[in-house]
Image (cartoon, rainbow, N blue to C red; front, side, top):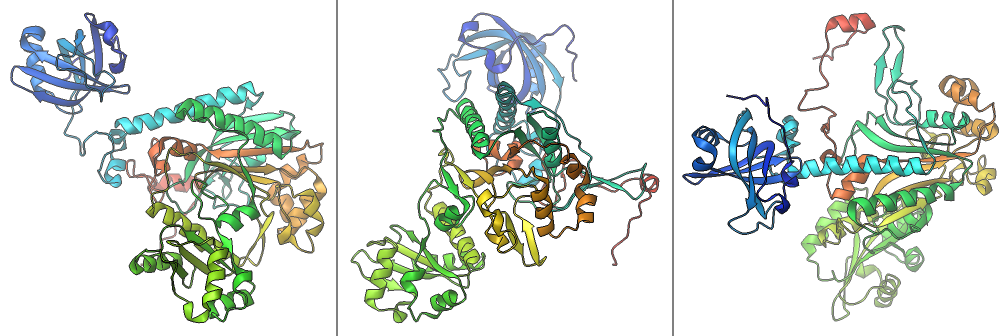
Length: 596
């Protein structure tokens, strides 16, 4: 039977009990992690958010009633124990923060009983994620997840303190807004008061934070909830949190400077990692040419090399065809992998095909300097030697080549270098390599839509020296945009915003908006821009991604209290779910059923 806490007061959390308390009486409360009855003496590991403390029950010390209760204890019972702290008789347990002491119980109250949990409440659980997410309230009791949630809270607190010291004001923006285009799908909220009309949940506070700059607030931030109806993966969720900020009267360097100092503080306080400033910067073009990615992992080399000029006269049809179609031939050097078995090379070829490659060409250099090559019959020994030299190849290396349109080549080799790094165990989670990627293209051409779309959003400022090309070569115009990347993951991004009405109008025109459409979609922002807009810029981090990398988790689900699975459903609460027909009737919404 569960008992009352009447008259009881917890004196310590489990790990607050130390050797300094030896001989003192304490009262601790928590969950039973494990109970071991050794016949006449019972050892109980008591767990709370702070950690584990060992309790000893002997009938001569705690009395027959409490000892009888202790015999009933099993995992996840909630108990209160009063006892005396003493040094551990069996030697120090180095694996516990409280390993030097234990509490000899004087009394026990069972505050709540528990059924047998569907999985063990233990660190690094091997239980399938689906089961753990169904019982997330139990999963969240695990020490490793509690640590992650604690780190998340610390990051939020430190961020707020740092930005407040830097003169930022924390300002909330609306959760129900007007739906605007040029992003992921919106989550829509029907209005009862305005039948047939809908709010959208914000994909980001972008327009509102720009309006706050128009309103003269100079420096804004918030930990903003954002919502995007898009396909999920390890670092995406339908709802997530941004560390969102905007600054007035600044340019690129100002934004990067304050954020470098924020990152330095966070990683020092949380990870005890000394981030060297300034953070390395690469232009988007250089990042693509060297790594095949706009979010390159800098923890290892294996950079791309453009060998188009070296092979331009080859008769190898794969290389020749790619160059004739305006593409390129590029390669990576997997140093020391020249003896890789053909079966593993074939597996890499199949992996590359998943990113659009028609195949992979390879050149393996033996330790004796001989070549084993998939295209040897199309090139002379001298030509192969020249190609190997261009790749920095030496005995024992494996050279892998992709030939196609640049976009395909970058995608293939950018992902292939990551796969090789995983296989070669080059990716250490506590090796933090930061990078700014700058000067993104302003626009990218969508084959599907048959027009240019904004690479970031329609309010991104172009590079001053490129703006003259907006009509003649819009794809060549660079943006004052920047992403912060850590270990191959984009932590966040931002840009300098357009604040001149003529540039903004032209930008919307290039994106295919008529004046009427622009006014309909963004009228409130465009109207505000008529009344003196300061130059402004901003940046937003994915808080979940930052914490995920800090704690070495593989998914942002491991740093969120109640995440959703890949189909955006919650296994615990069973959301989304049908609603009462009366609610739909009030909203004047009908549900169309799929044809069976």
